[in-house]
Length: 157
Image (cartoon, rainbow, N blue to C red; front, side, top):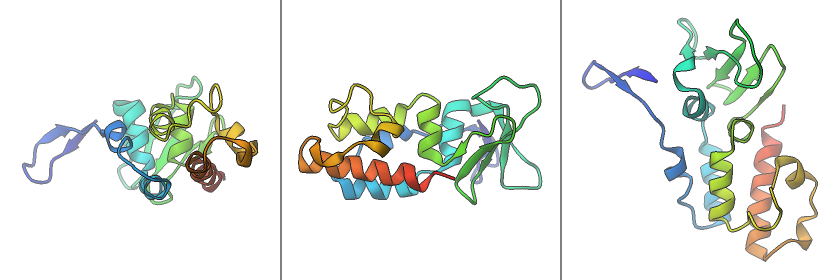
């Protein structure tokens, strides 16, 4: 996405390097801290990039919804609330839900780094929400699953 560089005054391409950033945690507590700083605008721009435009009088970004076909933009990234919402199809949530819905690159990176991807064939947010974590994996793996469960619950609206 083109952005104005405040130091040079020229336009520059901004590409968030979220995969690298979210592959560097060493404990469930550090993952929780990283997830609490996850930004819906960065995740949205990571997946849909130039298809999102910043609204002129608002801090929000608007674009065509990546979850359904449409001709008029009804998809919003709202940085103040750290929330996305499509007023066409009703899909909404926080940055982790947005990542999960658009391909799950961060989610997959997190589950692989935490060594929890092998616990279930595909750990979906729904399975994490309903799973009995006490019967799964090691103590550390259960802590990582709990962190992900709580992150998805926080983003439910």
